[in-house]
Image (cartoon, rainbow, N blue to C red; front, side):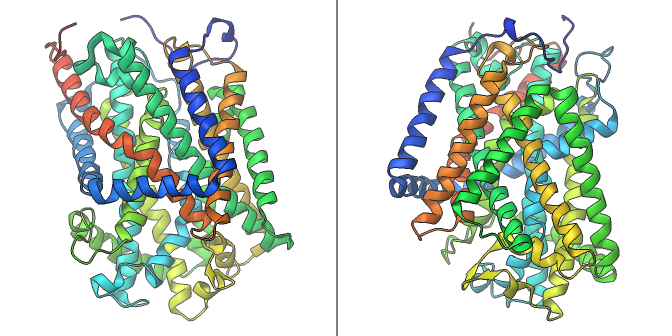
Length: 534
């Protein structure tokens, strides 16, 4: 196999061309989305809502089952003999240190979300989950606390990272061990053959591009509301739609600059500092928070998590008809699915010279364990504040409405150095979004150009800027159309677009789960991989 360099470098842009079959159709689709969002925001919301209802009612069962399927496949490849397979062959050498690999992998995945939901989600499920009536649980009880922590663990640990890991596994193996093009569609080689270079490849890669842009828009929306809320609390400046636009603009400019510098400089530097800030904040809350309660609650909650895992990851409420699964697990699986193919493509850039087992430990187990610890500390501290009568739940209501974006800043009022730590938190949210968007902008730009076919090449800066502007525009339009009509909050608007983005990827990922497993097992045995005629 020819020698590959999996980290694109700046300076070879003149050799990169636009993939017209992907760039132009997808660009036109986004222009249409932006125009509809501007001209008819109510229609924009109604269409989103109709798709989300259809996805949940008709395919909620598949969302739930598929998560465990992906996790099982990852565990199989990690702990079986296939875990010894090295990406790039037995002589391939890693190009990143272990720390840099971990930091980039963590921060490019769901690190953005844990900053927002670390306090908001455990507190919400303790008080007003929406499923308590159907399940017979009383708020602010031990049963509610266990429900809260287990729910949060499920949403933020093993299943989402399994979705990322299975995609990264397939793309890396196809590129480094089978010498196939470095892109998502290569994972379908067993059932598509050479068609991955034609219509099949264009459709698959275009679909993933659409989905990730919707997913990034959702995260940009959530992060924008949190930063704006923090600015309002710290300075008194109202968090208006004008501020949203300003915050998104600042984020976009920063991540476009970082993306332009390439992986070796921008993303590596951002991820390094981002991960260190995460660890420092974790230690701060653990030391100055209710340490004994955090340890006790976390220990018991992990036990419930292990005991209730399959019951909770298959809950759909078909008899009681609760809408809770739609707004929580289905939303989460949809947004992880929207991200998974291109996050996997990004993670595949980092793994040359590593084994499948090392890949799974770094991209599945370590981030999942980090998630368990993070939510145990922040969620445990937030639950303790509420149970001891500190009024945290009341503090995150504004005008009688729940304002989850305020939760971090209201939470920090109970800790020393409140203002300093609050500004650090806002900076962390900003850096987290920039890191995630940076990695995705580079990946999307690569996928829409021939840089995805020629490793070692960086997509043109103009293409990165274009996709940065597109994704930020969708984020703003989604927020404005959702919050402007009074029917849905800004947070729920981001959930809508994430579910819409992830729905078609569900079917692609189920197909990929089969083809990736088949491809690795058969190819490693030197057996025929193709299931179709060339």
